[in-house]
Amino acid sequence: MINLSKLVVFAATFAALAACAKTAPADTAADEAAARAVNVAWYKAYNAGDGAAVAALYAEDAVLNAPGAPAARGKASISEFYLKNAAESAAAGFALVDDPSSDAGVSGDLAWQSGTFKINDKSGAAVDAGKYITVFQRKDGKWMIIRDTWNSDAAPASAAASR
Image (cartoon, rainbow, N blue to C red; front, side, top):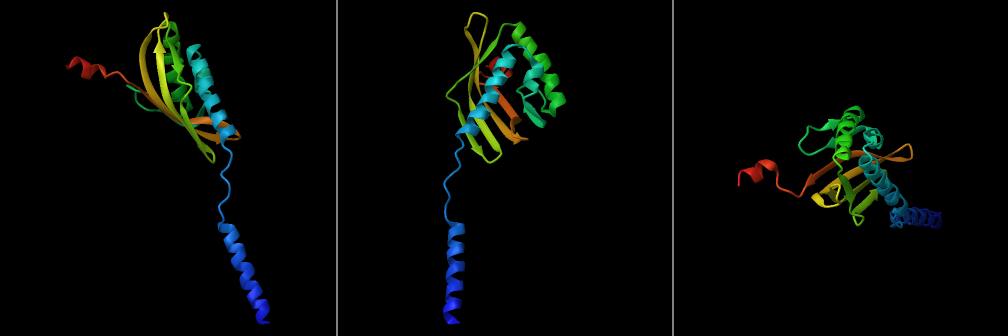
């Protein structure tokens, strides 16, 4: 009977140790590539002036924190913002260019991408540059933007005017 007790204690200890053992990290390369593909689609739609296609990349409960504007909460507000903003940018001949060396990461059903961008005019000359961070969530197997913000590297107009 004592040997059976020792065997049970040994088995329980082994099971507990096995449960605590480190497992290999998940291969996140495919998920990172999928999140990056959403940003590629974002740039393509935005540069085409297709605000509806841009807004379609956002989740229903997403929040857009655009510079110089109140937060746009929810897909309807985000759509309203981009229907105007993307069309105006395209009509002015601006093109946003993403830096392909941006950082990205994935943890479960959340992903993020941060990087830099340039805004070029019709001639291809850079008129602005800045940085962004975008947070994605996998919803029904699809990566959707849930938080998005960016800003310019240029000084704000009010700061530049006060100098």
